[in-house]
Structure formats: C-alpha cells, structure tokens
Length: 426
Ligand SMILES: Nc1ncnc2c1ncn2[C@@H]1O[C@H](COP(=O)(O)OP(=O)(O)OP(=O)(O)O)[C@@H](O)[C@H]1O
Image (tube, rainbow, N blue to C red; front, side):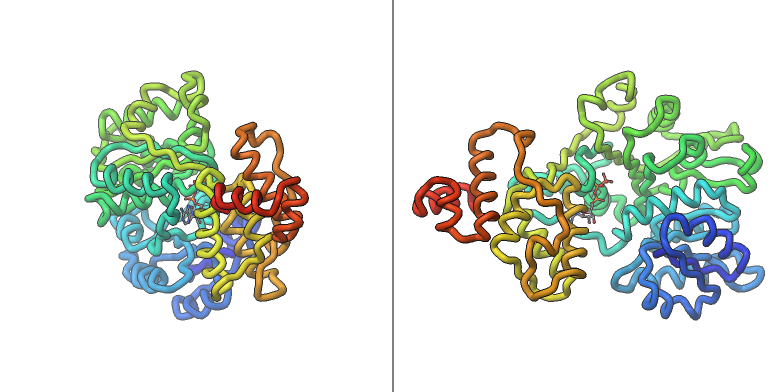
C-alpha cells in the first residue's frame, strides 16, 4: 500500500495514476488526516509533501510531520516531495528518517523507480533491525562490522538476494563516525540506465528534456554521511567509468554543468552477482572494483548458517507478526530448518508473515508457511555428512516427528537415530 499526502489535488492524482501499477494507492490532502490515514491504510510507503501553506517553501510543516511519522511503530518508508530543488531540505529530511526524496515536477520513470525501491526495502528506516544470528558465521560478520564500521574504508558487501546486505550497510553506517549524517541508498537495479547519471551526480535545469528543475545528485545529498550503492553489479560499463572518476577525484559534475562539486561521502556497495562474474572485466571494470572493495564482507546464505539461526529467526519473525510466543510442530521445525531458503532471510520473513495470517491453530504447521514441498535434491551436493543430515531431517518430516517411524524409514535403530540427531544438532 502506498499513501500519498499532498495538498495539491493535481499532484496527488498524477502520483496516484503513476503509482497504481505498483501497489494500491490511498490519497490524503490535509496534514490533519495523516495519522488516522496511517492507522487505516498501514502503508509500506508514504509519499509526503513538505509544504502545505500557500507560498510556504521552507518545508517546516513537512519535517514536523516526518518526525512524527518516524516515531510511530510500523513506520512506513517515507519519500519526501519537495517543490524546489533544495538540497538542504532534502538532507534534513533524510537525517530525520526519510528513505529518499523526489523533486516536483518529477519524471514518472524516476518516481516509479524510487517508490519501487522503497517498497522492496519496506521501511528499514530508523528502527533498523539488528542482524540476528548466533552461528559462528554471523558472529564473525558482526565482529567485522564493528571493526570496519569505524573506518572510512569502502566496503563491498557480497551475498545472495535477501541475505541482509542492506542491513549490513546500515549497521556499518551506525558503527561509523558518520552515523549522525544521512545514509542514502541508491538501488542501481531499479534505476533506468538513462537516469543513472543525473541520479548520482545531479543535473542543472534544462540539461535534458525532463530536467525542468535543477536537482542535487545522491553524492551531494549524502554529504557528511554514507552512500549505499545497492546492486552495483547492474551498473552499465559506461556509467562505471563515471562513478570511478567521481570516487577518484572526490567530486562530481552535475549534468549540464561544468562546475565540479566536491563530495564528502563514504561509499558502501553491494551486489548479489557471484564473485567470479564480478571479476570478469567484460562486465565490471577492475579499477572500479578495486576502489569499492577495500574491504569485502561476505554475508552467508541462510542455509549455511545452520538450523540454530533458522530457528532463531523463525521465533523472532513469528513473534513479531503473530504478536504471541510462537510454537511450531516438531515436523514444521524439522522441515523449515531443512528447507534451502533460496530467498534467504527475506523469504523466511515473508513465510512467517504468511503463516501468522493463515495459521488455523495455536501451533504452526509446515503447511501454514506456504512453502513448496521439495525433497532435498542432488543439486545440494554430495557432502556425506550433509546428505545424512538431510536424510534424517526428511525422514523426521515424513514420519511427522515420530522417532520410531523415522528410524524405520532410514533403516537404522532408534538409538542410532538419536546419535545422529545429536551429531547434527537436530
Ligand atoms: N540477520 C538478520 N536478522 C534479522 N533480519 C534480517 C537478517 N538478515 C536479513 N534480515 C531481514 O531480511 C530482509 C532482507 O534483508 P536485506 O534487504 O538487507 O537483504 P539484501 O541482501 O540487501 O537483499 P537484496 O539483495 O535482495 O537487496 C529484511 O527485512 C531484513 O530486515
């Protein structure tokens, strides 16, 4: 759900028409209606105008509303709209907890990209979650974040979709001396190629057909803070050269301008592209890669963190969505910890939300989570211990947690099965 608050009915209508293909859209015109509308529509994204009084342009009314919104529980991701290309106001809004800003009048393409990215991220704003997990891999990751966070080093965060790369970027920002400055995320994946440059470096009024107003780029807006370049693997080669130049010279030149502007940002980048592909010079410039990867943090896929982390995340998200202590049947736990989670933590979070909505009884069953019923397959590798673990989990699942029956299915004694459960920490 997207909620638009703008006192100009024409602007609100234009935004609604542009955005309705992304999600249901609700519109309000008066700031007085905002809080009730948030309760009623529980939006994922709020598009917030900054000025409501005729002639006002300082954004004070919008900033006050923004501060009120981010104080709430279940804060939506807030994108502020400014009528003037005011860097100062945009920066203040970002510091106050907005995830992004858009200047009016906008190019529809850009509005869509911006809202889509916010929907995908869905309000990690100020109440940023902690990186949960007790596995050795997660403990080591947290230790690295604490160590690297304090520096100005560029960090490249690698990992599959949904493993928590953005959460890592936010943790790095929080651990840094720049924590009081803004953290600005730019999703290279959802940004049309034609807009990359103006987005990053800004543009002067009239520099291209849609550039009706000047606009500061992300490098300038994130001054004093951190710029998080997400899905950097999707950046086309031509733009890679420009990004490299900006990083090397620590200055950007807005489109249509010949005056370079100095920038003061720390750059974090993330990608789900496999390392081998990233090091393919036909796809990614090695010189840019070396600029970005002073430190590389690898976020492991959920399936490699072990059953303990999966169980912990299940408890966390079920408690959050179901608002009660969550209980799982032994079979559900066995199958959920054996599941491969191709979409990682994001998939687990969504499955928990689904289960909380669909569960029929007080105890969650595997079916409540709406996951595919796939048996472990050979593509999971031929590691003997791993295969044994999966066979035990599959047998338990099939036997609905009944040990005698599972032992029979595996062709081992009950005692042998107990030893295997112990060995694999099941
Ligand atoms: N260790 C964790 N503990 C708690 N929540 C987590 C953890 N890792 C990820 N999440 C949650 O999972 C979701 C996805 O995380 P995030 O967006 O950071 O992943 P990502 O790797 O950036 O994904 P993508 O590559 O698709 O952009 C978010 O809701 C995030 O809060």
